[in-house]
Image (cartoon, rainbow, N blue to C red; front, top):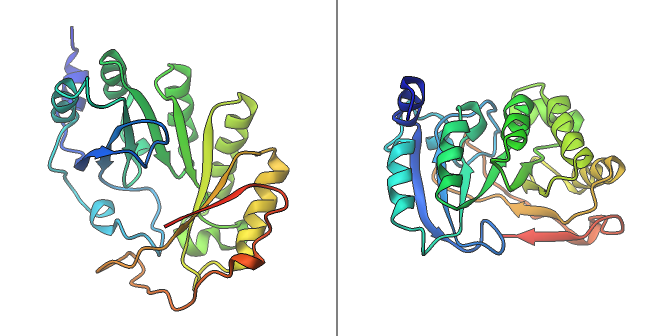
Amino acid sequence: MNTNKELNLLNQKIVYDFTRFTTTDYVGEISCIVWHISCNLRCSYCYNDNIVFAKQGLYTHNDILEFLNKRKSLLTAVVLSGGEATIHNLVYFCEKIKKLGFKIKLDTNGINFKSIKELISKNLIDFIAIDFKAPKYKFKLITKKDDYEKMLKTIKYLLKIDFPFEIRTTVNRDILDENDINEIINTIYCLGYNNIYYIQDFLQTKSNIGNITQNMVLNRSLIDDSKLTINYRN
């Protein structure tokens, strides 16, 4: 039986929108993506500014559960994204998703360690993608928050418990240059990360948080690929 707290949480309109079908966001799975409103960072290159600044979404978690209940034979997984999904209470939602038989991937900036650890401890997450925003010396400049060490704490924890995850960085070459990317590569390599490191292109849209454009392109020949496998995503 649902408690009043659970019902209240599941009926909050915190889902900005959802992508009903994708085969690319969770490798090997047929997924939908749930875009949660709000974020605890203000990354200058963020082109999901409409989601980050939204006060209310179009859907509730219950709306998504109703959709998933009709897609049990068509989808295999749910991707929780945003914004930043972990600023919301995801436990009840994830429990319901798991009961329907779906895998769950979490896209996160990694700074909300407590929430991430809780979801993992309750076996509610199957895979995590960490957005490594910037090297330490540029983290606050780009994100407007001094939370670099919080992100590292999450990465260290995931490595310690051998949890399946990937690390990725969205690159606007006017903000992050080749030396910055190499610094990130060296940092995560020294931490013990040995999976693929994904470099994603900045997407120029009508607006972004920093109202920035991109005038230069990353020179891939200057990226150190001797430590990790580097994969470029458009």
